Length: 362
Image (cartoon, rainbow, N blue to C red):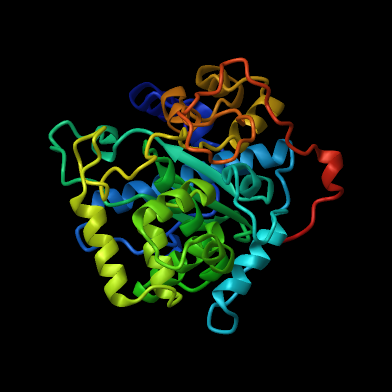
C-alpha cells in the first residue's frame, strides 16, 4: 500500500499502521458460529458477533505465536452414538474434574483445557459506529462459540457480560457443549441447541448425583438447596430432572408455576426472574487472555498492549480485556453473601511453556 494512502487510513480510522499490514487470520463466516440465532436477531448483531470473534481470534494467534497457549484437550464427540451422561463424564475427566462432584469454579478449568473464553461488556447498539442507527430490540445473544486458527484447532467461546452467576455458568457450559458436540456440523439447528442444553445440565449437575441429593417429593426449597451445591439454576434443574424422567410432566408444570408466581422479597420480581440465591456469588470471568498478555507484554492495560503490538487500538482491546479477571479463592457454593475478590488477590499460575512440552498439531 502506498505510504500516503496508509497514512490517510491511519489518520481517519485511528488504527495503528501495523493493523493494515499484519497478516489476517483465517476468516470466520456465519456458518462457523456454533449457535442458532433467533429469528429476531438483527443482521447487525450477527455481523458484529462474527467480526468480534474474528478480532479475538487474531489476538489469540498473536499471543500463541509469542507464548504457546495451553494445549487443547477437548475432543469432539457425537451425541447420536453416546449418551449425554457419558459425554459429560468424559469431558469432565478430560479437563481434570471429578465426574460426580460440584464444580466450584468452572471458567478456569475450561481455559486450562485450551478453550479461550472472552466476555464482552458493551451492548452492540453502543458499539455501533453509525450515529443515525437507533438502538434496536434487546440483544438475543448470550453466548456463541467456534473453532479458530488456520486449521480450526483452537476453541473459542464468547459471552455477553451478565450479572447473574447462574446464567454465566450455564451459558459457558452450553457453549462448551456446542464445541464438543457440533464441530464441523454447521449450521446449528434446534436439535443441536437442545443437545447443547442437555449437555450443560448434565455437565454442571450429573443426574445420578443430583437425584441422590433430592428428597422423594421435590420442592422449590429442595431445588434451591441443590442449586447452591451444584451451581445451576432452579429452572435448569427442573428441565434436567424432567428430561431424565425424575419428575413427571405435572410436577414440572407445578414447579414452574410456583417459580413464576412466588415473589422474591429482595427484588419484588418473581423467582422465575431472580431466583433464590441470585446474588450469592460473583459472576465468573475468564483470565487466560489477561494471563498471557501479562506473560508476553508485561501488562493488561489496553494502551500498553496497543503500543506494544502496534496492531490494535486501545479502545477495541479494552472490549476484550475489561472483563478478564484474576482467579478467586476456591470456595464451595454455600449460599453466603457474595464477596468480590480484593484487588491484591493472588493469581493462580497458568502452566508455562515447559509444562506442555513441544506443541502438537490439533
